[in-house]
Image 1 (cartoon, rainbow, N blue to C red):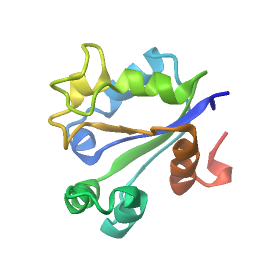
Image 2 (spheres, rainbow, N blue to C red):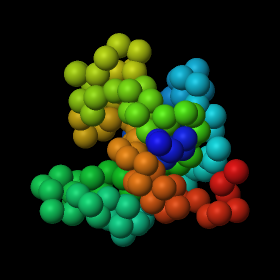
Image 3 (tube, one colour):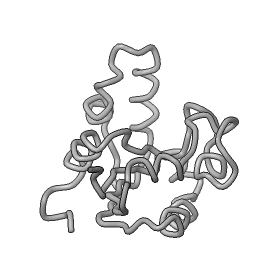
Image 4 (cartoon, helix red, strand yellow):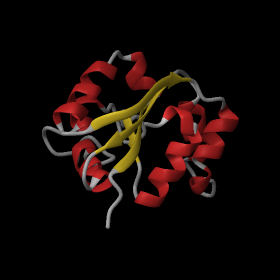
Length: 139
């Protein structure tokens, strides 16, 4: 049975471009309840730890640098079938391929600057949520 929670974050360039409110609106209109929310900034080391699954990929260094350039908005979202439904809401990593009405179609600049992160599995949603939120911060 799928978990009812997923993790997401608004990436630094989308925060800098003042898209947080629009993205949160799309999330809530998509039927998600925001369980936890915080604005914070990652160091390059923290970004490296968060994205360590990609450490062997050629874009890893650039990704860590981009993710530590400014604040992010981290959140835990709740909805039945949360991971799959959120992945559908955010759309393809490449905004040129993203469907109309998705977050990335509306707010992403490019495949690299794709506005939001969304967990790709229930297991990663739990790991990523715990990376940013203590037990006291999750409701």
